[in-house]
Length: 122
Image 1: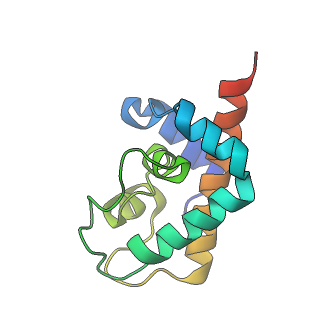
Image 2: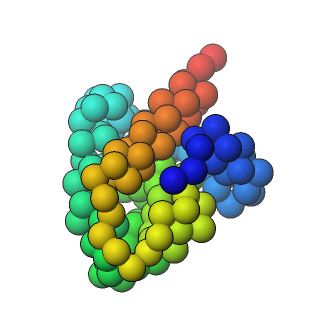
């Protein structure tokens, strides 16, 4: 797994990853549910869509919008196993370990917290 500070510096240099923002609906959802609930949804999304050794529709299993976690996954390259391998050094072809899921949740938490603060600051 990659050092989070190094990861976020690399993500900031990617025009594709850096363009993701929470839209008004996602921000409203985030604000109404709170970070803990949103991340609990994220943990379930990871368990269902990313944790298996060979996820169904890998590379296309994460929508681009519809939940703050989906946006965060694309922004942090935690959207598919290929991105996890490339950006986070988590090998594909095997089930994610619990500590790897915790790592991804921590990455999502950091992005959601920082991005939410950036977008709501005057």
